[in-house]
Length: 76
Image (tube, rainbow, N blue to C red):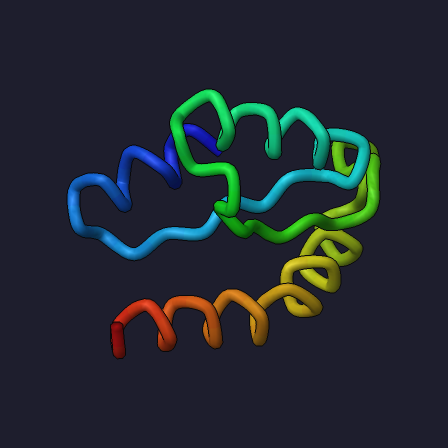
């Protein structure tokens, strides 16, 4: 979360992805950095025990949202 915020502060479009149980933590981090409306993506938890194929599938499911997010950021 913080990495995405810091990248954006440097003018580099970024998006944070957290697992669902950490959504509240991500929201708190954004608020603490003065960005209460900072949007980010979440994915089901856990990911540490996924096989490479399962992790690839999870990434594929997020890819369109990430691509759309970054495209929108590039337009603004």
